[in-house]
Amino acid sequence: MHQVRQSEMDKHRRWAVVAESRTQIVEAGAVAAATLGREPELVIAASDALRDIRGYRAEIQRRGVSAVALFSSDASRRAYTTVYELLLALAPVQERRIIDARQPGKPLTVGSVWLLGARCALDAATAAGFVVGELARGTSPELPGPVSPSTSRWILALWRDAAESSVGGAVNHVSGILAGFRRLGWQVALVTNGEPPEQLRSAVDVLEVTAPLPRGARFTKESAWVASNNAMHEVALSLARRTPPAFVYQRNAFLCRVGADLSRQLAVPMVLEWNNSVVWANRNWYQQGPQSRLFQMIGDRIERYSARSATLVAAVSRKAAEMATEQGADPAAVAVVTNAVDAESVPAPPPIPARQEVLLGWVGGFGRYHGVEVAIESLRDLPDDVELLLIGDGPERGTCEELARRLSVHDRITWTGALPRSEALRMLSCCDILVSPHCWTVKGSFFGSPVKLFEYMALGRPIVASRLEQISEILQDGVTAVLTEPGDPVDLARGITRVLARSDRGMALGASARQEALELHTWERRAEQILARLPMQAAHLTGAGTDHV
Image (cartoon, rainbow, N blue to C red; front, top):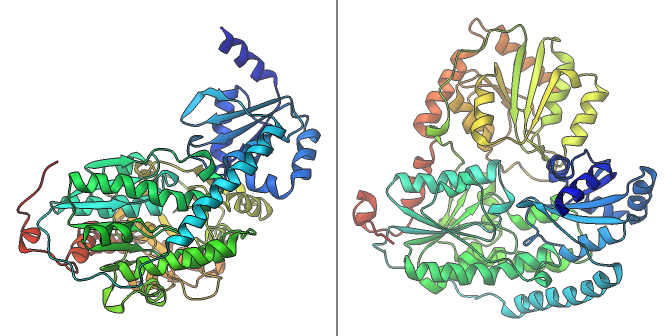
């Protein structure tokens, strides 16, 4: 009865919602509306509110907001726990609440400003203890010794950030390669520090999730990352004793040293999945706070330790491989293992629906180099019957929507938000042309290996993509795609026009790309490439001697 009364009261309040990150703004608004019974008046990222507390409070008053809620994907694991709650407590409202996406019907309360202020001081001291412990721990200067081949058929996989990647290239990469190993007869045990998406769950045989970290350890994201090393190590070591692994597989992550520690402790090979130098990415892509220099130093030391410890650094591109050697990896231990596609999950190309308009398809994270703004701008140089389907979400989506309105092309674009992979692939398969307009505006060469590129190929639709580093190495202009100048919307429009001018409207391009993807770019092929570089006994290559839990 109390919950019913509370729900009715919520409907009459004017709510502001604070999202944990900019990438969650759309999801936070939708979940809050469903939970509270009405659309919020304001949805703001916590980081933006913290940068301008005065402006945040003023905006709440200007909009007549009477209640504030924090949206959390998992309140028991989120970083900045006390800081975000203090942000809510500072709001000039009477009602404050935390909405946990895992328990949306169970509102959580927020303490007083004074209590939370004291808690901040206590949590800061706790977090500092974890950081000091990491500084004192150091790294082993010596390289690991030679490893004897194992007869085990188990892989111990580690991905710290699995819970933060429900869709997108990261989860497609990790789930794809692990599924590739399994199709070759291996068994995979995965350790994460949060509940992973179903796509990843289905790619492994055993899943272990660490318990939530203490509140103080989560005072900042960096302190949580440092503290998670011990938590993941403990769980992974226990798992390894039950299912002794042939090797350890870890996705490279900022401040993550678990794979290197376990490889040395268990005396088994380590494969380090290397998409880039995470130290470089952290320095160049993310907002730098007052503590950034300290964590950059720690992160650089841990990444060099991991790179030196790896039996194989599986770099996604030649440029990524160069970054690995710059971070201390032995060049002989580095191999280019590009991204790929899970061919079994990609639908066969259906007939294009009968329609008047031409539909362009794009999927991605609205990130820095995905080039979605180039696709939007290209609509100005294309006929009005050319429309654009944008699948995904991310930090630049709001900027892209504003650009589309400014160019008067917003009504020619469908914005779906993030979708499950199967639904995204289904929608892309119904498009006339798929676009990959990547561009690179930061220092250095493009090091990416877009997963979408290989999925586009397998979908069998004509592709128009940027002539950029690995993209132009995988796609052949005029054979499997049409390539255009990176960052040039006019040239992108020309490329699209070239496809539409073909007598078959590019279907031969799509068919050639699909054939190549299914023959050369599957995750099984990538798994074979990795296994061939590890010290394995012959039984591993024949599928014999499978272990069981």
